Image (cartoon, rainbow, N blue to C red; front, side, top):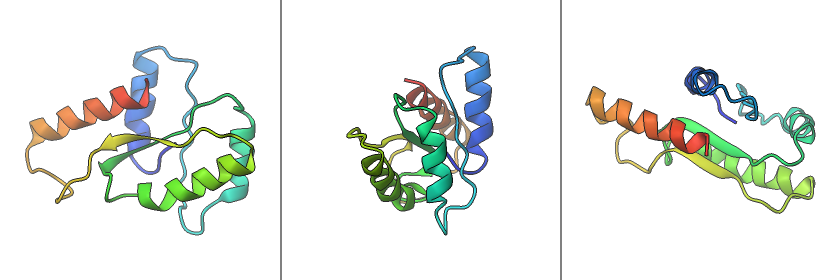
Length: 115
């Protein structure tokens, strides 16, 4: 699951790796949170691991907003597994200012998202 432009990176990685066992759910409206729509989508994948992926650091972006909501949805569906996170670690700034480091952390994000 993701929001925003990281969807295109995830989709490109899925296509490059020829993965047909990964579903990507892109949520564009985080507030109000689309509970009914997310529940309907997750019901289609009862054995799926739920991972939130974002390009922003963990302490920015949507993670802190969606994590408790996704956990509540999973509880509602009777799934005891938590929500995984694939993204940048907590950082003091949203960007390092170095293109190489940005690309390196993006590559790690994609690797973590497709475990």
